Length: 211
Ligand code: SF4
Image 1 (cartoon, helix red, strand yellow):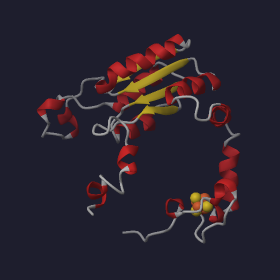
Image 2 (tube, helix red, strand yellow):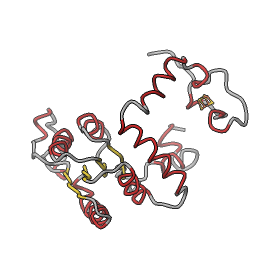
Image 3 (cartoon, helix red, strand yellow):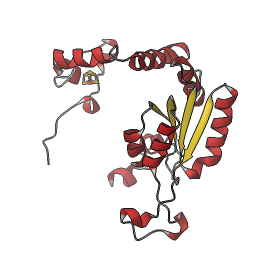
């Protein structure tokens, strides 16, 4: 196993945000090479879409801080980057929710095209999954085809609604348009994974850390 290395997740100071305290000795920001920092900065201006995305997301945070829901922010973001056609990559378990999202976005004037995760209807045996829970159906989620269908539709921005952990990785890997997440799947916590984190010192302590 690789050696433990302290990083931002081990920092209690976060001085990079407001410069109100001091940096930890292992500060990631302070140890990044000037070349790497410049390389990253230059990329914000390397492509028009990078400039648009960086500006739109920062301006939405600034203009509507704690005012807009994430759903509203997605519409604002799409508008500010000039997107006209939106793709929705949805879990079929959240198809009703996706219908509501599509209606909301269409009323905002966007074209919307959705793909459900079972598109293509490929049997789970294709990826070697033979012990299939009969309650769940036999077709596998097909995030690569979801991405390819949205690529074919030439969407300007893709919105992820409830794709499983990992299926989202494949979807974003193959999608050509920028992607943003509206809903993350958590079947236990009503799609609110941070609930487990908020309870990590109390009810979920044993579950998460075995204490
Ligand atoms: S960049 Fe430095 S100060 Fe900021 S969170 Fe990471 S370690 Fe902490």
